[in-house]
Amino acid sequence: MTPLFDRYAIVDWSASNTPTTGKDSIWIAFAEREGAETRLLETTNPSTRSAAMAMLRQFFRDSLAENKRVFAGFDFPFGYPAGAAAAIAGTPDWRALWHFLAEAMQDRDDNFSNRFEVTGRLNREALAFAPMYWGRPMHQEVPGLPVARPEPYPTALPEKRLAEQRTAKAQPVWKLAFAGSVGSQAITGIARLEHLRRDPEFAEHVSVWPFETRFADDLGAPIVLAEIYPSLAAIEKGEKSCLDEAQVEGLADIFARFDAEGRFGELLAAPTDLSEAERSNVLTEEGWIAGLGHRLAETAAEEPDAYVAPGSRLNYLRDPAAIYAESFRQIRAETDLSNLPENAHDLAIRLIHACGMPDIVSDLVLSEDAIGAGRAALDRGAPILCDAEMVSHGIISSRLPQQNKIVCRLNDPRTRRIAERESTTRSAAQVDLWNDVMDGAIVAIGNAPTALFRLLERIDEGAARPALIVGLPVGFVGAAESKAELVRDPRGIPFVTLTGRRGGSAMAAAAVNALAQGLE
Image (cartoon, rainbow, N blue to C red; front, side, top):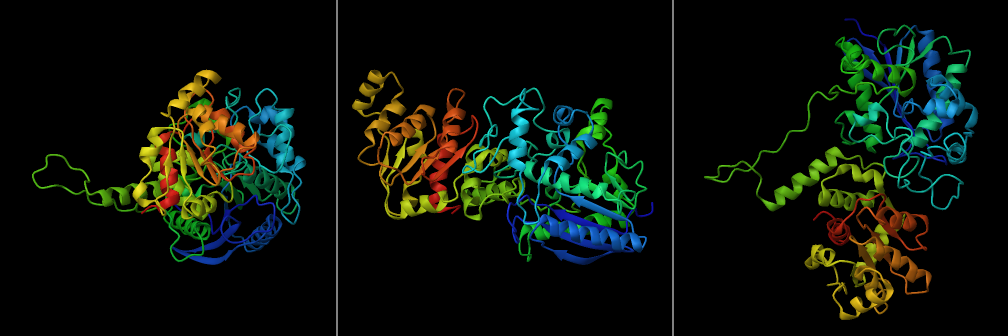
C-alpha cells in the first residue's frame, strides 16, 4: 500500500486562560516523510491558541501550494457522547455541535475564554434535564457549574463516549478542570477548528476524520484533521523539556513510520467489533481516536524478571524494595500525572498504590498549596489527627520527620458520651476533643464523612485551624457530599480530597506517608 500523507502536524492542545509555555501548554511537531524516514521540520511551543492556529494555517497553506497531503492530529475530543449534540445544538449531528460551540465561544488572542460561562449556561438551560458539566476554579463562581462532580451524577446522557470507555485513562468531555480534564480543551479546540473549516481558504481542502472520511473510506481531502490521544503510545520524556514535547515528536515519527510502511490506513480504519448502532453513533456525533485499538509503540517496556526463591513452587516477587519499585513503575506507566503539580506526583502514586485503582487520579482535587503546607507542618512537629484507628496504624511513624504525635481519640470515654448526647458517630464526636491539638495540625480523615462534616462545622464555629485537611472519607452516605463541601469552601485551609464515594483509611494514611517520605 502507498503512503497516505506527506506531512504531519501533531498538536498537544491547551485551554489555559493566559499565555503559557512549557509544560501543560500547546506543543506542535511539524514533520515530513521522506521515503521511509521521518524528518522533523520544527517543534514549537506557541503561548496562545491564536498563535498556534496561525502556525497551523501557514503549514497547511504551504503544504497545499506544494501539493503535499497533511495529517493533523489534535489531542482533544472531536465529539460528545451520543445524544449530547441534540440536547445542546438541537440536532444529533457533530456539525451542529461544532457550529454551536464556534458561535458561543469567545476565545481571545490573549487566551482568555468564556468556556465556564458557556457550560454553566448549558447546564442551566439546554442540559437542565441532565446538567453534565462540572469542574471550575474554586474562586470563580459560575451559576449552574459545580466545582466537583455532582453526586448523584445525571444519567440521562452518557458520561463517556464509546472511545473513552475503551481507553483506560481517558477522561469524560464533561470534566472541565482538574487532573486529566479534557472538557475545556475540547470546547476551545472544536471552536477553533470549526472556524478553520469555515474559512474559504481551507473549506474545500479539509476533512474531519472519522466523520467526513467515514473512517478510512474517503481520505481524498489533502488535509485531514483527526483526534489523537498521546497516551496510547509508550513515549517517555527522555532529554526533552517536558513529556508534552516528547509526545508530539514521538507521535509524528510513529505515524510517519506507519505511513511509510503502508499501514497508516489500519490506524484510521473502523474497528471491526463496532456494532451497527455504535458505528452510527461514532460517525454521526461521537468521533473516534486515531489508532485506538492498535499498539502504536513498536516495543513495550520490558517487564522485570520475577524473583524465584529456591525450592519454591510459585513464581512471585518477594523482595519488599523490589515490590515497591515495581508497583510504583506500573502506576507511573498506567497513570497520566501530567495535569497534577509535580510536587503532588508522589502523593497521587501512594494513593493509587493504597487502593489499586489508577483512575482515581481523575477525581483527585487538592489546593495549590496543599503539599507544601503539609510538609511544612510535619517538619515543624505538627500532630496528625486521625478519625479512625486504622488511619493512625497505617501511618509509618518511624518516617515522620519530628516524631510527630499521632492522635486518635475514638476510644476516649468522653467521645462516647458526646456521641450519645449529640446523636452522632464517635468519629464525629471526637473532633470536639481536638481543641488542644488542632491548631496547625494535619487532619487525616479516611473513614467517617460525619467527622469531615463536623470538622468543617467546628472551623465555622471558630475552632483552631489545622494546617492541612486530608479529606478522604469513604462510603455511600455522606462521603461524596462531605468532600464536595470541602471543595466548595475549604475555609481557606489547604486540602487534599477525592471527589465521589471512594476513599478509605489506607488512602488517608498513604497521603500522610507521601507527605512525610515521598516514595522512599
